[in-house]
Amino acid sequence: MDKVDVVIIGGGVCGLAAAYFYSKKFPKQEILLLEKNLYLGEEQSGRNSGVLHSGILNPKNSLKSELCSRGVEMLKSFAKAYNIPCETVGKITVATKKEELIKLDFYLKQAIANGAQDARIIDKKEINLLEPNVEALAAVYTPSTAIIDTASYIKTLTKSVKNNSVTISPSTRVENVTPNNSNFVLNIVQNGEELNLETKILINAAGLFSEEIARLINPEFPYKIKPLRGEFMKFNKKKRRDILMNGLAVYPLPSIMPGGVLDQYSKPRNVAGTHLIPTFDLLANGSYEVGSTVHVGPLSKETSDRSDYENNRSNSEEFVKQISFFPGLKSDDLELDYTGIQLKMEGYNDFVIEKDKKYQNAIHVLAESPGLSSSLAIGEYMVGLFRRR
Ligand SMILES: Cc1cc2nc3c(=O)[nH]c(=O)nc-3n(C[C@H](O)[C@H](O)[C@H](O)COP(=O)(O)OP(=O)(O)OC[C@H]3O[C@@H](n4cnc5c(N)ncnc54)[C@H](O)[C@@H]3O)c2cc1C
Image 1 (cartoon, rainbow, N blue to C red):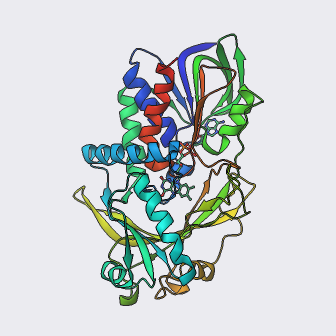
Image 2 (image 1 turned 90 degrees about the vertical axis):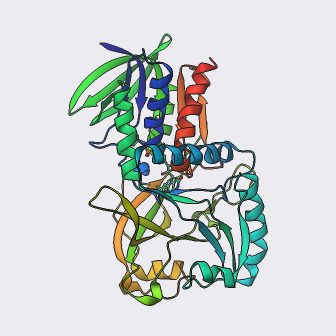
């Protein structure tokens, strides 16, 4: 049976970030990253809004709050160093009804407490100076919100990890994990072939399936995931003058999560409602610009199937209803785009990044949004947990 020092399960941004920091900190250890799909980042990491958040939704004094503000700074610097398309476009979170105005102050304070010192409330006039075709009464404006090209980020992070001598094994599914003295034995299926592998350290970054992996190691793992499917459509902002956008991200105030799930404070869990997100055009000379395609989404629905991306997709009329703050857009302007399935914690509103309660050489990471924004800080934090052993 093959033996390695470290196995990381999952080739999304969290698994890759763990590999990046672990290999930098412990260059002599043999590290293997296992990914069940043929390509890395095919699940949550490659199917999200691509927004680097300013923390408007993060509970104060949470791990989300700490790692998101640090992670965004780290990711902006990483993008600059490696020429990854990343642009600080700003974001407005809009109130469209009078009853919503009282919520603005709460979200403003939360954004500032989470590090977005430049956040402020703006009125209708200023909204329309920023985005003339958005119809809203007032908004929280967070100028430091950015967008990133996630495909380029995943590609660059993968290259850096490989340069640090981490072995990446795609098409390799972990079927079972058995603790064995102070090590773990993994049953894996690699391109159809069953193999066993032993490791001293295990990092479980299996995203939507991290809960299953955690229970293989320790059936008493306490956290539960409630997956939420998010569908996207898109439009070309240059097609009609009345849907022209300057290129801000435009969000409604957070809405209650489908299914009415409560958090650990017995408050309804909120999710970012369906929003408008600018995207990049990659140019022939290798540079990029904020382009003409705008993503509309995610339109969120409860799901029990963590692999069903396409059945029963919502139609364009449902999307138009969700973004009433952008009245110029007609259902005919919209084209189908990708869907993503989000990890949402049931009864808990924070990242879970911790050593297994029974086996201290295993770490579990369950990172819901803003996991992309926080990914580099999450990777660094995970490796820090081992340092403190
Ligand atoms: C619709 C949507 C919108 C979002 N918008 C944003 C946003 O704008 N900003 C933001 O910061 N965050 C956003 N997020 C959240 C962000 O995408 C996630 O927090 C982040 O990608 C989580 O990364 P991960 O590596 O933990 O998980 P994943 O990307 O899901 O990676 C886990 C990997 O583990 C692999 N795996 C699972 N089981 C096994 C197994 N048994 N064996 C081997 N491999 C396995 C999977 O194939 C997968 O590749 C959004 C998410 C979604 C879905």
